Figure 1 (cartoon, rainbow, N blue to C red):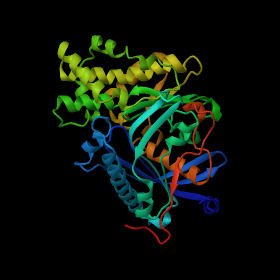
Figure 2 (cartoon, one colour):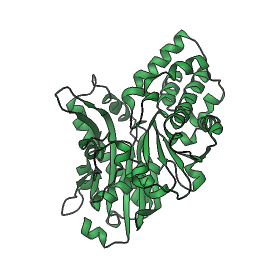
Figure 3 (spheres, rainbow, N blue to C red):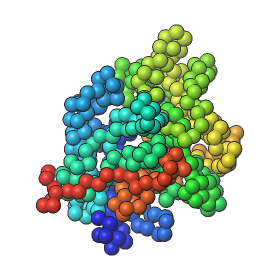
Figure 4 (cartoon, helix red, strand yellow):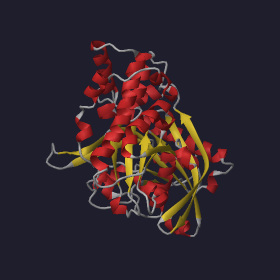
Length: 404
């Protein structure tokens, strides 16, 4: 792959990801051109492909050890490979291109378990992670070399396998004379700190805590499963923040934990949301107030992380928000209120001419392109790894083409 790609000035790559919200597969087709250690990216097409209605709850079963079994994981690994392959072919067709026009695919897959802290039960520091969505299936169905299973290479050298998006952010967003914050709000919130004129070792990033995960879970609970989210933050906008409940939620020890740190559904997932609902039963508040409170929690956690861990070393002028949370108007309002005393303006990816929905899919396209070129595609200063690695496992298609 490396020799063929070095002869091309522009690479076409599909990037795909399914995040902690398990909404579906985001697929972006981009053209990547290189200028020294920077990249220029042109988004050719983007699609969000919702998971089939009957598949999504079966993925959620895999998040809980008591309902997850080896046969279920194995089957879903291959089923998601088929679903991702269709997503890749769909976004290629949307761009008016053919699979032969695309150089590679990068697929993050669906995380079902992530344990970033070293476990010492057998006398060795074992970190582990599981993403499913078989890369070999994607390569076989599309006829395109596919890079998948990114996180394990970083964890093998002592990293947390996250956050990964700061590396492509470094390639695309850094500024010479201004420090900025890049905040992704998916199921989990994560912040990348980009100091002015940053070199790779000066960039740092970490998970700030829950993003949309708790908001979505509460919206689903109060609607009897009818709602997947609080669209635009409309329900929260009609409520008032309950300070007593908010104060209790702010006591979670994760917020005071120093970076590097990552978190996920294991901490802020279904069980956490249920504890909030149980607390509401003891301290009754309206549905609107409950959603307002958990929405404020996300905004507070982001600003609190900035004040605790970033301001002492780097004063930023701007917070650029991406991910699904950037469409929640109430969340953006709360963020602006939280950051105003710090002199930090809040903007979205769209304000800069980018696409919030496509950001993470584009990031994995960039990481896949680096892997295909045999280049480092992670920042050890962010993940805590001892060395920089080339993340990703490459699956090559059958020699005689795709097997659709």
